[in-house]
Image: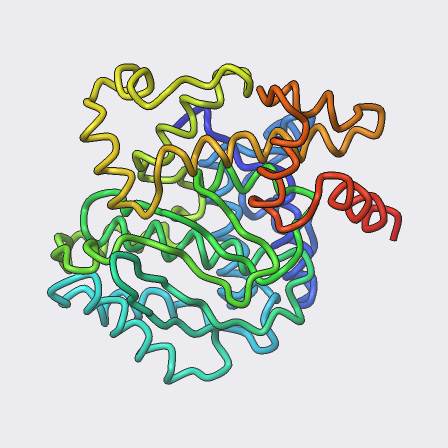
Length: 337
């Protein structure tokens, strides 16, 4: 935990938001007992400093939406929601009661749960007009995942994140926050989790909630992802290899100290597969290489382990629906706008 730090975009955005309430950066840092020496050269903060800063922002602005919502969400709303759900029997019960709670405040971001087979989505409905840096969206995603994990006393597997906006400039930080695939330009802001976890019992009590609320939801935002799914473990394992030399399923299972059958089953339960993860690793590397104008497409194919450029073309079309050259041209034009 001590090595985990909060990066500058997540520090600057809420400070900019509460400027709407007349609060300056200097005042907030002074009130939170944070000075210039607490920031690293790249502008990041320790989790402890960040939690104090966020709590100061909420208390001084009296707005849990940090000026990033059309109307303020009164400080203390999250605490009252917590008290409303703590007596629920299961996670699904708690999420649906939380949804009903926020429906009483139409101006606040709303929450719904949608189940479809083995996967479920926690969908967040938010007016994003006052959230240009997407910080409120990012915060709501992180808070609902971490709060759900706290309620059931274990990390809830996070299978995917969907964001209804273009990739932000700090897109790489999403991997640190969520440790799962993030899709941009989606129709909704949502988290995808296994349906089975909705049946997990609430293990917390009124007493533990009281302790939890002493520093929440600020402390919740400062925590790293509480769960590492098998999907994330495989993705991390593959990332240690050159894309052209990715290990097979049997080797990966051995590296993760499990059997091939168990690995295959766990990935299936999480809505993934080993082949999908290998394809995703190749696609991410292909995107990176195609962003380099000096690398021709045949060299990209070879770097990814394809012996024939035509095979790479077919694979890339399957991944994106477009040819590599067309994808490169589109990305170049978008970057020029």
